[in-house]
Image 1: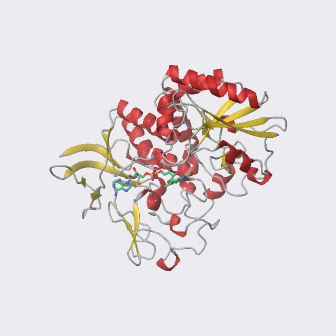
Image 2: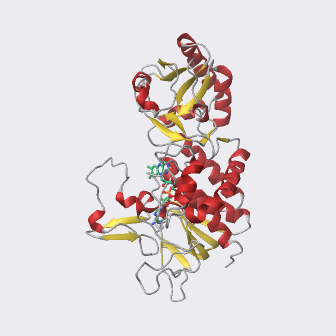
Image 3: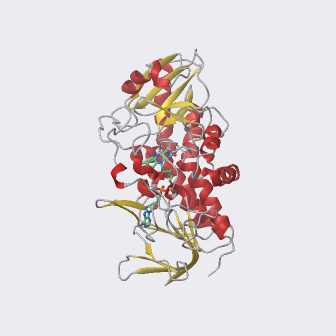
Length: 434
Ligand SMILES: Cc1cc2nc3c(=O)[nH]c(=O)nc-3n(C[C@H](O)[C@H](O)[C@H](O)COP(=O)(O)OP(=O)(O)OC[C@H]3O[C@@H](n4cnc5c(N)ncnc54)[C@H](O)[C@@H]3O)c2cc1C
């Protein structure tokens, strides 16, 4: 049987944040996850909050904190320190996060030629954050034959003023496709293949020089060049530095369809930080546990090759991502089930699970399903029960998108809630020893 001071279930931003913080504080931490997390699918920025009419993330956070039952009611105060900590962890690996919660939310181009609002982005994408000047040119540039990024289609869509959400667009938008070294005629390129090629210093220099020639033929400064998010997987800081040195315009990366290269970089940095502090990470199997008569979870179980894997721990952080992450499953005709401990789920009644409008601006009704907790992030008994509001698992803390009361996609607060709750869960469990 394996042992740990704290078992963390889930390897997303919430679980990894909690695990690294606990490991930094000297706890023996073991992360168990059924699979990879939102890091591998989402665009790669850190979304703290963006409501349709909020000017800044901070404004959205402040408003969400006033919504009864929203996790930011407890977590908004944690966020500044949590963010400072994340910036420091990433900076140690050469990754910078640019922007701040109080900065204006900017319309950032996407790979389908729309824009999304963002204020906090990794350095590789952050060139899209400053407001566009009317005399600036945006050159959308991608590798010829790369089906996830079509410069002409993206530029065509971005030329529509309505794509820019009322913000000033670049004065001119150009498109260019470039044959990259050794890839002529290839039509099956993936973002991972390309990102790995950009890890090679000799190949990337030749590629960037070709891109520089093509961009220079389309535009002169002032301007910026939008590239797909492929500037290196394992050596992104060096690839980004080379792109800034060689290209005639400031480059910025545009997120692509999954898998997310910026998200993979973030995951790799967080996993590295966890391991450096002695934490363990095991990905591949769903985990189960039970709450004993004393209201504690003493061990977690997962299938393994020869026999069941059992992890005995003094405390548990549950960060399984809610409906989006697989931690909550909508089952049969009417049940919302929390998969690891069978905790009571707070969510819409079965009749309201589905919306008639697949693209409703209100978001998907099931997005609100989650676990209610007290201020210490302990799961509590369901509303209306005799124990309403009382903790039901003393040594368990819930973090991230599993927390009830938020619409992590509609409110674009999922990363902020994950980060702040991961940090708070770790603090609540500091000092736990088996
Ligand atoms: C495709 C997608 C895109 C998103 N885009 C955005 C965005 O742009 N902005 C935003 O704010 N939010 C977005 N979100 C919401 C996202 O959930 C949060 O932003 C946040 O990063 C979630 O972090 P998390 O750690 O709570 O959960 P997740 O990242 O979902 O991680 C959950 C982890 O728990 C594991 N797990 C689940 N069930 C079990 C089990 N039974 N046993 C063991 N492990 C289990 C999973 O394998 C995974 O490792 C997106 C979500 C999805 C799914």
